[in-house]
Image (cartoon, rainbow, N blue to C red; front, side, top):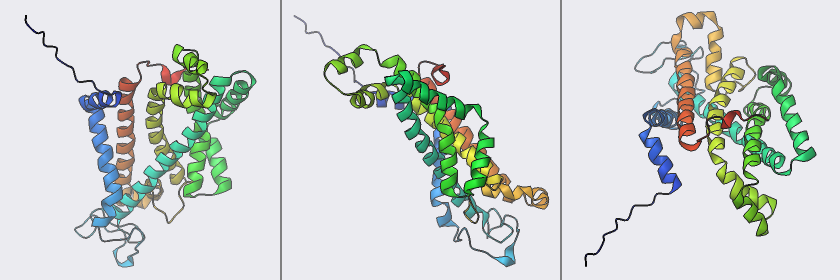
Length: 297
């Protein structure tokens, strides 16, 4: 009697399957590589220049790229390569921290609105409607004019005005998941509402949230650059890509000193495009529902 040989297939975890899909998506993979390079440049770049970001050299003001200064110097003789790397730390940090801030508020309120419903949901969603009906920059400029430019205020402005988007997404996901069989089973086992949310609902709604988070980081970096360009974001002398771009408001620098603003613009553009392409790739991998990010109220 012949023994039948059964080939055991290697079982992959959801993380391994997602990682395999990311590596097979060329655009997503290239975007991830670009992001890693930009982050490494921001972290380790100043270590290789030998200059401090705020080191002033009045004898080398507005000099172009050379062997001494790879990307030239600014109007105070500061090394632009070092300032770009330092600015990357600030801009990327603002994007990550502001996104985390808005996620904490939006996920919490979205879960409460979707799970409890009734008057609680009505109050939360009306607040969302009020915030979203005003143009972002109008409110952001008003708050920035009152609080003043600083690292912490920039994060606060982006976060406090950006949470309604993730709140709507989480609410729609909770509404679609709160009555499924495994949630009813969890209730029958005596789990409380918080345990149901964090153990069962949020893990199954993580796809749209991860995609939104990725795109939100890119948006926060753009918002920081815009506010800093207008003088209402990061306060000088602290460097960011937005504050470096603000030097282009001077017509002489705009025309004659390209090294003071074009590299910063390229870095902002590269970072935002890489994050957006990565978000598009993640949406195809993690979110089978293409309309999840535009779920109606």
